[in-house]
Image (cartoon, rainbow, N blue to C red):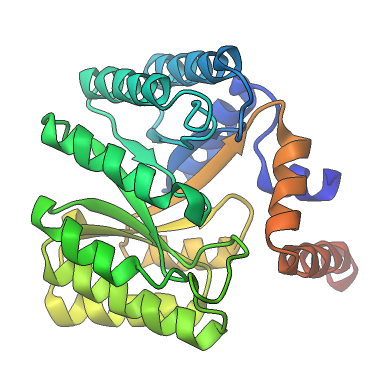
Length: 287
């Protein structure tokens, strides 16, 4: 857990996250801050996470760093009190709008998909333009969701998805997920959306770049997103190519719970982390 957290989580405190974002900015990358904490059990826990996001947005302005925030609805009380959750998200979106900033509503497991999309549509209907959503290519419903969202010309992060889902809900094979990923970003661009291409898969990045070139898309229509500590050479390459790169920066005292949950939800991560740790241990020996 410590190996996972040291590389892929900024640290336990907001100051750690701001330092990380500042370093990313200096390297030509933007950032998205994520306060760790999901599946809260009480309204008080949900309000505490909301307060942490408020502090994070204040720090972003005070420190003058280039970052937005991403929120998980179960961390803000979706399964405890949906009305409280909606109120908190709305408040954070309004605070962000006052600073010209953006809020991304993360997508969690399939039990929350409908509620997450409903809240997003509700916020957009209220006139909030500085809010975006996430779609997961692994879900069979995703292209249908694209068809229902494109009239909003949404800002959508597209990722493969990490949650273990049953076959009737999600594609099970890597190639099927990759195929649906490409179909999803293509359909979104066709509908006028801005797409955050969130993947470390080199083949998908190459395909996205091909679609961007073929459509003549400007920087206002796309960006690439990567996780902190993952495929840093890919981020460098994209920045050198003139593309916008945004790094997802999680932080907070819930680092252990976050790391454990990621491994439970996707056991393949254990292999990725182990290989990454071995590679970094070998690097000094090869110099």
